[in-house]
Amino acid sequence: MTDVAALTGLRVLVVEDEMMVSMLIEDMLSDMGCQVVGPASRLDEAIELTKGAEIDCAVLDVNLGGQPIFPLADILREKGCPFAFATGYGDAGLREADRGTPVLQKPFREGDLARVLGELRAKVG
Image: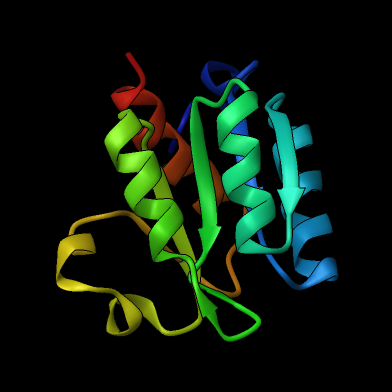
């Protein structure tokens, strides 16, 4: 179990195209004391946020209205910003380059999100 207090102040980029899911993730993050960056519902919007916002880590929906999130994943990887994918398809929808990246299987609970954020926090330098 992740110590939720250790997540306080973590700046988390949220990229999710379903408004209700996005709101749920935002609420979970707020409850854990994290700062929500975004959310973004489109790839171009998310890429813009990575240019100007301070981000410690990210939670990325794999599929944004039929558009894959992988260009953003590549940008975050280049910047050294850890991230997790959120998907209903598990590892099946990931590229080979993304194997080993934490995956939140939708639907997920706050405890699942806290555990993954704990893993990502450990990677934040």
